[in-house]
Image (cartoon, rainbow, N blue to C red):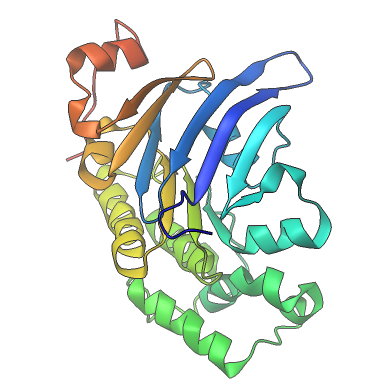
Length: 258
């Protein structure tokens, strides 16, 4: 793969669900290595479906997804598992094992590499445990490793989820509404750690967001979806009031996260 080649190429991607809803309709875009790409749009515009198609949690109906030069939509078995190891994901609702310790939750990011049985048995190497502890320090939770995940606040749990995804050493990180369940001040805290993963660790990030103020502050480029189609692609700073109304509707009012 050439150094200047896109890390992700999506071409003419369609997803129609069994109930007939066309969530994605001919979506095409590329992502350069090292970008922090924001994806915006109303609920139901196709943002979550898009991210889940990229790592095949949702099967596309048609179209092409190339990651690292390889055709993801043609993969199966070990090839798909290997590709998913290079694609981390942060969900809106954290998806932690609440009864397990924070450190154990971070270590599960190695599940694809060490295998299910080693993970269940807790048979992680000293190097893996050291890496998990290091990542907890990076997200500001270095003293929480032995605490049960259920005892953390929502923002802290999301930071554990980020550390868990970074445990994979991903090339691409998909974040699906990572701050939707959080208060404004906590939202900035979580976004700053995603920004750190992008700028310091070189992780390419594709992040669904509701709030345009967060998109303007943290992302380097943005695409906007409306009814499963891209209606805007470019700089977040160039989304003026007219573009905002076109993306979100004439009656929409922008809510800023301070």
